[in-house]
Image (cartoon, rainbow, N blue to C red):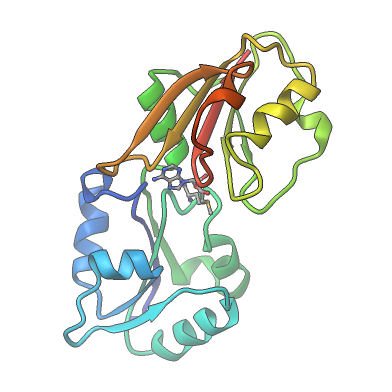
Length: 210
Ligand SMILES: C[S@@+](CC[C@H](N)C(=O)[O-])C[C@H]1O[C@@H](n2cnc3c(N)ncnc32)[C@H](O)[C@@H]1O
């Protein structure tokens, strides 16, 4: 039987937010790939072949290629594999038959849930290592946007960009940091007051409601 690359969504961080099939698959892994944090949390150093994902994607692909003939290769990704993960890169090199995906809760889903908001009409924008076209941030009455963020696009800079694109100061801003962890923070404020929030949040989810 041909072996598969199994891309497993590990959710926003805590195992309490992980689906049982993901946990079982990771527990049974003979070959496991993931970030250092995920490996520390879920790896089993005894007898398991492990690879820690850093910036070098070519090295990850080489490791997968080396081990796939003999074993399934389990790749842990944060959140859901279908939403900005290395699933894209794996699909560029392997056919559908070689890949299995186990879903996870995306940080975006969890953020909307924590804020008690539906997300079916929301626009979802990743500003994690990406810069969207400025006009994609334009204000429209009733518009809802969820953002993935990073060091530069954060809880202070994104509100300013939105104000420059016509969003009123009264728009609700939800800042969702460290979702699912013990030090999770959910702050509800407005775009006008965002600059007054003491901390700046970087790898968080922001939700803005016009
Ligand atoms: C490369 S993206 C990965 C998204 C992931 N595939 C998902 O579905 O959540 C990383 C970004 O996701 C968000 N993120 C991931 N985990 C988070 C958490 N526990 N709390 C808040 N935001 C999180 C942050 O915006 C972070 O910069």
